[in-house]
Image 1 (tube, rainbow, N blue to C red):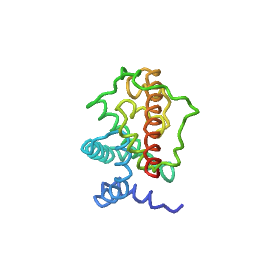
Image 2: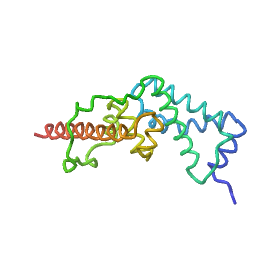
Image 3: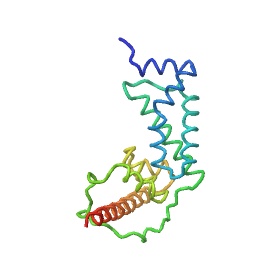
Image 4: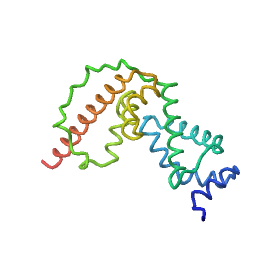
Length: 188
């Protein structure tokens, strides 16, 4: 069976070929920076985590198992998410006692239409969430982790993960409604 481009790149990476690593960085750094910026709001933090992620990839490429097209990217995203979580734990920490009374409960029937809002605006809203909420939201929505898995990763109680997700969602709905109102106001 003929090797595809991804398999050839992996073989070159395994030999620690410098050009292959530059190619990998060139092909994926933008995407992985986007993954980092979902978890971290500071540009320097994103840069540090991205750099640490590539170092980790370089050191552990020998343990990578090819499981079909896209598995390299999935592996890289997993490393980047883990590095982002490590950074959050070391620098800001996830608090379980965020003031949960601060935000009103939003009835489900009031959920806004996400399709109407540019993705860049939604990502900016996600980045503006408090650290704990943002981290839980990202792990649940983008990494498809259960609250039990999130609790294990972050060292928090499972019900704390669920409530932080609920509050993050409520905050996002609030931000989306504000966004929609400001859009309507432009046309009035």
